[in-house]
Length: 169
Ligand SMILES: Nc1ncnc2c1ncn2[C@@H]1O[C@H](COP(=O)(O)OP(=O)(O)OP(=O)(O)O)[C@@H](O)[C@H]1O
Ligand SMILES: [Mg+2]
Image (cartoon, rainbow, N blue to C red; front, side):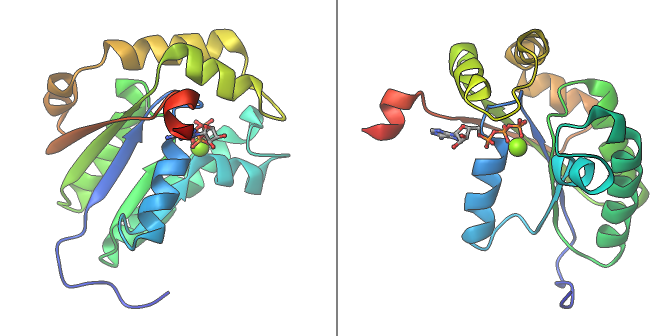
C-alpha cells in the first residue's frame, strides 16, 4: 500500500438495496481516481465463506471489515464501504469507527426503481431472495437525507441508477 494522503481521511458509506448499482458506481469512481479504498462486504464474505452471498460468513466478514477500515483510517486513507447498509444499526457501526478516528463520514444513497432492482437481481447467478430485496428496497425508499444527517453523517448525496432503457439510450 502506498502512503496515505495529507488531507483528513474520510469514510463514505454506500446505502442501497441489492441490485441498486452500488458496486458499479463505486468501481467507476475508483477508476476515475476517487473514493479512496473500497471495502466490500461481499468480497469479505467470499474470503471467509463459500462465496459473496454466503450469509453464514457475515459475522467473520464484518469483523474483518471493521478491523480493516479501522487500520485504513488510522493510516489516513479515504475509505468507501460497499455494502447495503440499509438499517440504522448497520450504519451505526461505521459511524462509530469514523468517530473513533474523528474522521468525517458521508453517505451516498443509491436508488433504483424496485422493479429494476428485482430484474437485476433475478439475472444474477445466485439471486438474493426476492422478499429480502423487497425489504431492503422499502427501507431505502423510505429513507431521507434528513434521516441520515440525523444519524450523524456530515453530508449525504443521492444517486439514482438508470432503468435499462435509459442506460442503453
Ligand atoms: N447505472 C446503471 N445502469 C444500468 N445498469 C446498471 C447500473 N448500475 C448497475 N447496473 C447493473 O445492475 C446490476 C447490479 O449492479 P451492482 O452489482 O452494482 O449492484 P449492487 O448495488 O452492488 O448490488 P449488491 O448489493 O447485491 O452488491 C449489474 O448487472 C450492473 O451491471
Ligand atoms: Mg455490490
